[in-house]
Each structure stands twice: as C-alpha cells, then as structure tokens.
Image 1 (cartoon, one colour):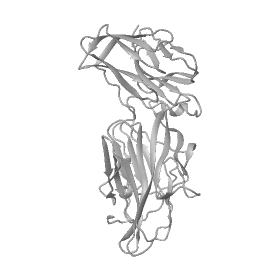
Image 2 (cartoon, one colour):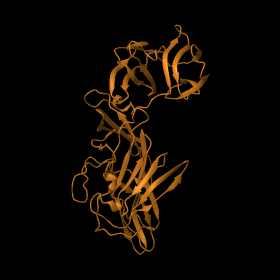
Image 3 (cartoon, rainbow, N blue to C red):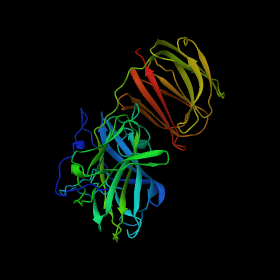
Image 4 (tube, rainbow, N blue to C red):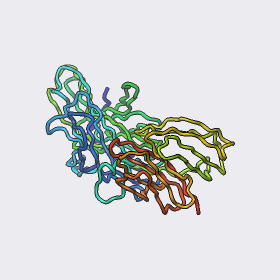
Length: 416
C-alpha cells in the first residue's frame, strides 16, 4: 500500500552527501546506440566521459536487457532525456533520465511494468576523443568501483478513483554488500520481489504527484554498495492498481537517477611474493612449461593453474601445494591462448605471446590506480615486447576485436 504523503514537503536527501573523501558524481549525456534497438533487445548504448577518478576517465555502457508491459516505440520513449529538469526547473542533463510509457492505456486490469537497465563502467583508453570499442573494454582495476552510491529520484505517483493508484517503482538487483536506504521523511514503500534466481530490492512511490524530476528526500532512495562493482542492474517501472475507476491513460513518466560517491579500491598487500616466473614452449607446440620461485608466502595454501578457454572463461587445470614450490613445474595445454611473461620482471620488460592466427588485438597496461601507462592497438604479431615499465604492480589486458574475448593478468615489476 502507498504511504501517506504530503506533496508540499521537500527536504534535501542525505543520500546526496558523500561519506569520506569521495565527491565523484557522474554525467550521463550524449547516449549513442551501438547495437540492437529498443524493439530488438538487447540494446547497447555508450556514454562517454561520465566521470574522472584518480586522473582516469570513466566511460559507461547502458544495456536495455528486458522490458515488461512497456512501450518501446514512438517518440515518447527515451533512453536518456537530456532536457529533463528538477522540481525547481533546474536542468538535470547530467542525470541518467529515461522516459518510460506503459504498453497500453491503463484501464480495467491492474498491471505492473518495467524496463531493466544494466550499467557497466570502463576505464578510458587514454586516447583523445571517443574510440569504440576500445574505450569500453577495460574494466576498473581491483574488482570495480568501490563505495558506489546509486540514487533514484522522483519515485512518485497519483491516486486513481477510490483506493486505486498509479505509482512509479525503482529497484536494483540484489548483490552482496548492497543496502537500500530512504530518508526518515520518506513517503516510499518497500518493494522487493524475486525473479528467477535473482531478487530485486527498492521502493514504490506514494500517490503524490510532484513537479519535474523531484530531488526531495520524500521521493528519493539510494542503493549503496559496500563491495566493488563493475556494473549494476536496475529496473525503472510502474505499479497500476485499479479499484473502481480506470486511469484511462498511457502516461509517459520521466525518471531520474545518478551515480556518485565512488573511487578505485586501495591496493592491498599480496600474500605471495614471486622471485621469478617463466614459461617455456616450443614453436607450434600447445604445451607450456610453467616455472616459478617465491621468497615469501603468507597464509598461502597453494597455487591454482588456470587456462583461458576464450571469452574470459578461465578453467582450473592444475594445482601446486604451498611450502614446496621453488623450482616446481606445471604443464598447460592451451589452444588459442596467450602467455605473458616473465612475472615478475626484473628489467622492466614483459613479453606477450599469442598462438598462431591473424586475430587483431589491443593491449593495454594499467597501474594499480587504473591509469593506462602503455597501449598498443591493432596488434597482429605473434610476439610483442613491452618495455620501460617502472617497478610496481600492473594489469595487462588483451582484447581480441573479432570475438570480444579479453585476457587479464596481473604482473609485477621488481626493482632492478
């Protein structure tokens, strides 16, 4: 049931205030459709330069994954209305602000509907101007963005007849570390439901109609993520409850949301310090001999050996126990694979070796802050050497343009 409301009340939501040192908020403008369409899902849109973190540009994609009882045709639908305004008629161009319309005129049957969006975050490739797809392939380091706060504004509605209502809904897919928060003055009602193997959590609106995309605490809710995220999935929708009167409309509703209060995770100390790592293989052979030595192991049980079977599908194919690892060897059958060695490097040089083939690949090297320090585009050679890396830890990402497969490996460069 909707809660009692008072459309005249408006206080600033505390969810807009960042905790700690982070003040980053996003700017979603200039959506570009890259694949699919609203009537041929999934539909993929890109948003360029939504934020800057630690000197790194962040880009985003928004995918319309699925819809339920929503019209996706005509001029009423919009993936992001850059002309939207708030309750004081101030522009909210920077918000992610879709327009959503029920699939039919709301009459004699109670019905619910939604559009499901998945927002994914990427680190820009460091090249001026938008590059697709390379600006949308490198995920944030160390597991994603930490401290992410997603705010859904203007979750309001209206009465229909006696005891009936039309109200907006805003929910997010439940993940570990998620909390849903409304201000103490909220007029929102908890709105949680399962769908397949997922659970969606959030709020449904009151029956007070507010002007513009209201940022008042009474109709705003925040989803806060305690664990790093590379993407989140949200549903923006409606709940029509009929009693004795038809609404008799197909109302297009303006939604508004934004992201903020996030940063890159801090680097942590690894339990294992590698003195050396190498890989030997012979021309045209698919067998790789891995050798490594360690100088320090803290709370380490052992080493899993994994092979990439394509499309970021890593499979464990071997295991070596801890405490007796120096000089051990393991054998790896890997077709269509990539080998990055030595790890650690003692001279600032890393080799990237590909199986035979004419695939075109892009290689990027990120430091632990997520900054791209090296980038090589359009690689077709079978052996690439990356030089002049200063001591530290890096992430090497190899993106294959044709298949979209991505290989990610952490490497260490020791002092010379």
